[in-house]
Structures are given as C-alpha cells and as structure tokens.
Length: 127
Figure (cartoon, rainbow, N blue to C red):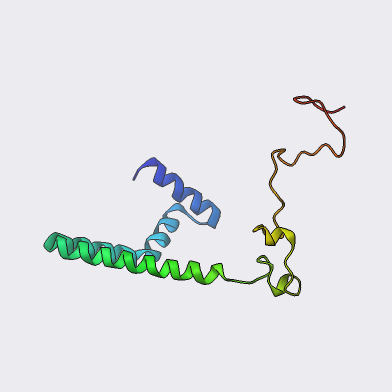
C-alpha cells in the first residue's frame, strides 16, 4: 500500500473515531459489490473483449440518459432557492429573475471589502 493511501485511511479512521484497520475493513465491506462487478467484468473481458466493451458502452449511454433526465427534472424544480411559491408567494425577486439565487449575494471584485462610503486611495488602506 502506498503512503498516500495509508494516510487517507488514517484520516478516515481519525474522523470516524476508529482504528485504521477498521476503517479499511469497513471501506472494503461497503464496496465489495463494486469490486465483485469489476472482477467479473474483467474476467469476461479476457474471454470476449469486444462483447464486454460493447456492454460497457451501452451501460454508459444508459447512465448518460438517466443523468440527463435527472438534470432536466431538477432544473425545473421550484423551491425556496429557485424563487418559486415557497420563496414568496410565487413572486420572483430581481436577483432570481436575473438567474441568481436569492440567498447568494452578487459577486464583486472587492472580495467583500467595501469601504462603507469612504473613498480610499487605490492600492492603499483607508484611514
């Protein structure tokens, strides 16, 4: 095992309040189905690479279709952050009408540092 992988599992263990070995064991138990799928796919690919390649391609196309469907579904979501009825009786603020979320302030190039009405010199601090 590389030092980088060990360090990640040590961090996971510390965050979870468990030993590194337990963190590794839990991770492997949680991902055993994916490992089984990968092992069987690789075994089948050795025997029939073109068939498995076509199956994987079809699977990826299906996942792309599902992802697009979900993105389309949730892009039409009308919730509190989208300016829908839950946000204020169906009225949209100027920020949400312009495509900005009502809870996100407009971006600016000051990094949030506003002089409060004073006009400081450029490149210096206001006094």
